[in-house]
Image (tube, rainbow, N blue to C red):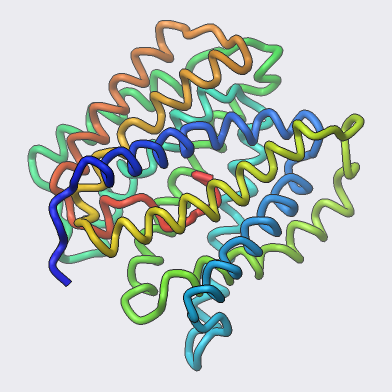
Length: 309
């Protein structure tokens, strides 16, 4: 089907999804005050998995892997589990604003890795310049020192967020290959389903189930990440991708770290330090440059990655 031009309604919907993505790490940080990292991952992926299963059932999509898909889906889940583990632990150790910028630098790493693993996505001088700007921004952010009350171990936390962004980039490229022959719902469901027993086992042996009394707010934060981000945003984005070019939709990705930093400032009253603001500008500019008119699957956000989720 020939992609349709991006109309105002679709553009507003894509912008709305980007705003929700921007709040994902903020919601994660908020929930971590009650649910430790691996319990948080477990509840989030359980709610997300159920949401995507319901969506797949409503669309009549086969859920069980076909012959030959079990191995690739398990490999994808291994990447996913490692990436979410780094995301949750890193966010727990650094501030939400720093975490959201570093995580959402993943399109930069996606474009870099695609140069070596995808013969159709080679770097151009323009994209190399964008990578340079973005990497400069990543360095500025990674070496920053956020408020100690929000970031007990910022050096380790920032480092883990960069590792998580790299794993997310690798997963984007790997998922791109899987969805050439599989409905996107199946790999998304099984990457989360296979992660659940791992998160449960680690949580049981290493963490208390809760850190303080549970009320509706941390539960809402979990549901935001699971149902809204990995459920609703996945459904909306896949619907938009069926109508419009992913290269056109990817232009909204550069706005995610901006929204995330703004939300962190509001929710946590986080000071917007100079190095953070400069880093945001450089990363945002770099993402905009490297994804502009980039190949569809590489430039587009990872389908329901639960970690833009």
